[in-house]
Image (cartoon, rainbow, N blue to C red; front, side):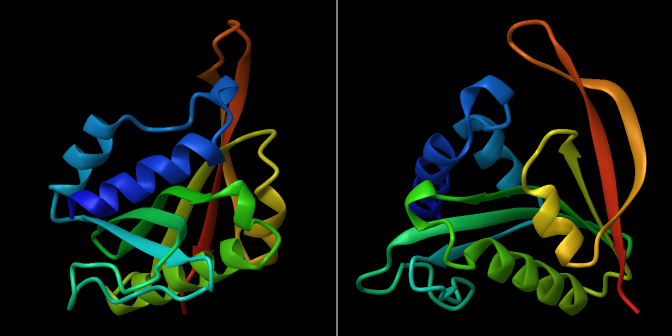
Length: 160
């Protein structure tokens, strides 16, 4: 799994603007992946997501382009992170990752899906187009490096 962490760290380094402080550290990522409720999905530049459950090694020619990190607890699935490398944006990989997130959540028996984002996140358009609706707000939740604060917005999608 170590090469998978390397893939995710490399994608995060390029995908997340440091001003927002959204990227996780290697320690945070590897620590979370040791928990039985945390799952991840990698996707290649070609839109294919290899089945790492049956084969831990990446297939020949695999170019990591994006990933999701999720948590499943008691019939709920939460999107913790989603990232697409900037060189591979505009190819539908974010939407494909969201579809796989829903598919994986259903396979684990989730009835409800959640995600939380900063209030000015451009990914909101993707989330809404996938059927997510805002259900709550945490005022001034995110603190930026310059001291400014942004609200967190929680979105949900019912799986029925």
